[in-house]
Length: 69
Image 1: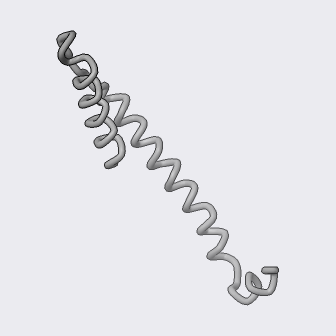
Image 2: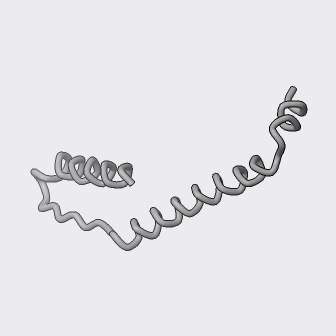
């Protein structure tokens, strides 16, 4: 959640530094798209951690150690 915030801030500051003295700068951030990307990323991360976790929870510790090479 902190990445998009810091990235947006750096992007705004970079545009102002490059174009601020030559052109009038008005920054618009598409908040709706940003929220959609964040929600999808959180869902993908949760899904990627839950499925392997459930498989690991069903495996007996002795069996998992015995199969390790």
